[in-house]
Image (cartoon, rainbow, N blue to C red; front, side, top):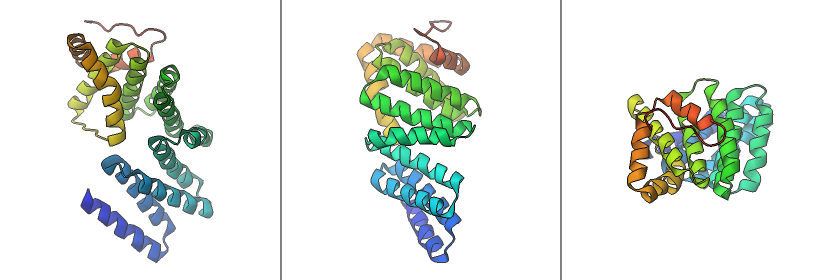
Length: 236
């Protein structure tokens, strides 16, 4: 992490000296995501995304600006500035122009804001919308993160067992893929909602988690998208 961070800092300095705006923007964006995902160094990450967005705006690079705005929106969510994050998420959705990934990110940031405000019902609706957006390009990892978002919202709606079934299914999927995701912001949220629910339910929570681990991921996605109370998977 430290080596990669220093290399990116050198790259930013060099691309700035060379006057290559496109490469500078790419380095700034990568630097911002590195700080967010691996160091929880959120203020410097926000500053990097803001610099990249300004450079793109000045150069008329609309697509580049949109990518940097995604980073800004993410950092505003993390920093708790939801009054700025939500309008920016809506702007991202308006910029999507049929692009499902940008629209998906917009819904995701909106859902995060709802969850952090304690509005679990609204968060549930928004994470489900974001889940639908993640399904369109077939991104299984993004899809699994949205299933986790739905699960956290269900905890807020007092559906802890259903939430733990979904969480167990995601854990099994990641294990099968050899995927490890440990983004500090997201990991803390998962512990706050799902970790607490698992402890609160005790043995019942472990049973629900085990049911989830034996549930096919496609079935877990259908469960997450179900209207009303989630339907129990086979074997529950």
